[in-house]
Image 1: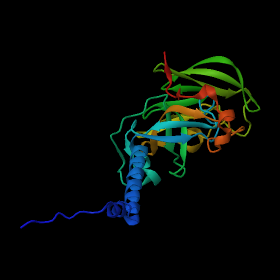
Image 2 (image 1 turned 45 degrees about the vertical axis):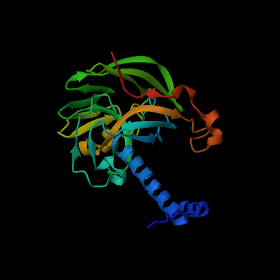
Image 3 (image 1 turned 30 degrees about the vertical axis):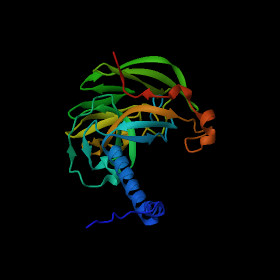
Image 4 (image 1 turned 180 degrees about the vertical axis):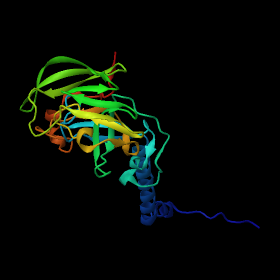
Length: 261
């Protein structure tokens, strides 16, 4: 007995391959996997951030767009979107190094992202007297580079060198801000699992002098590189027609790792 092979016309094939429900289902599945992959990369590898304030001048400027490595210090719930409480405490932990620029959740609300420079490690004795930072009884080395200006303020551009040989530039206002005591900080010993951070724009920064020490669990990652920067007085990343005029061409792919001697 012969069996006749069932065949489909090209019209039927066209109809099957273009079933609206099947296409919608495939698109939804593809979108789901794309979102899942993006969330995985954002949570465990790298996350983009933008700079909204001047607390890290001269090294980070308003309008900078940078990448933060999420794996540098291990992972906590703050590595995940919305700080989902899935990861207990911190896993795969690797302690930050003095001088790193770190992103963290402020201990004031455990929700808002801040970016500062890490100065004090657990066990360190920290003190600031007349703008001079002492770590474990030894003063950080300061070298004035030049006079500079931040907005309407006259500032000193200073090279700061840590005991590990890493160095970077900071701003110090020439005249103290009367209502803020940014030049002095009473001696403290940093307890285990906490860090002391400062903004590079020393007289214009909400940092550990005001918000307290940063818990280890609040670390989000290490700032690695400025990819692109737009002058907010001219345009922004979200207005493509202003890109060329607003682009800071001298701030493309700028490393944020401190230099070493």
